[in-house]
Length: 286
Image (cartoon, rainbow, N blue to C red; front, side, top):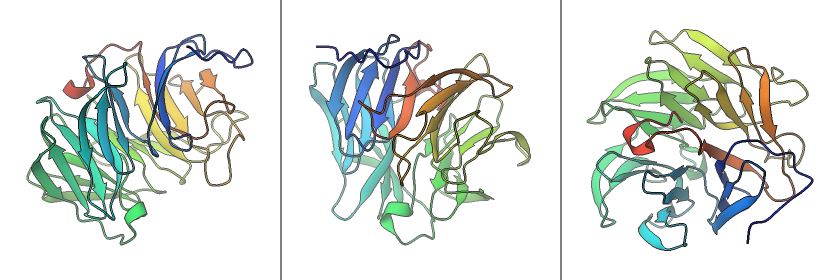
């Protein structure tokens, strides 16, 4: 049955969220009802696929489930590793971000690894090595090297092309259709958009969202109208202190915001489900 919280101000858009601290992924209706939820151990990346299934990373691997909670695909990471991201790929494979082994892997529909990319992160601590990474349309890899406080760009064959220092511990990066990079800088309390030359063309700072200090920017979604969905992760001593995510216009004004501390602990990633596009074809910009 849908879970209703009358005290929660509706966000006004249908959403898919990962609740890292709440150990679940969920679909929230535009009127704030929880339509669907599924257990997941410390999930981060979460996607609704073109077939309507939900793909998500969890601490020990990644999984695709139907809305009837049937597991139709899964990958289990080796012992002493942590998984902090995944991405659906056009060929049906899934890219998995595996810390401890310091690698990106592409996993086939049979659960077997079909490609492995070694990532030259310097951080030794498994938990701090990587967060949300993305393969670009032309096959390059963008790495959120959390502990290194940098974005790494790798070629399709894994060669390091460039290192971009960040003001914090990056949690998500993606290349926009215009070639710019959008970066969530974690506890650097900033979000940056960089052009091809590395110049900052847009920045969201700590105090740019009125009455809502940014604590840890863990994710985003850039929308076709130029708006940006910004996720404000509230762990590390900030639980229940402010809104969990916002939709901002191009002038960084709040269009709508989401706050529901009763049902969600620390939301990490969000996908707006009323934005058309197949994430496996790079049509959802997050």
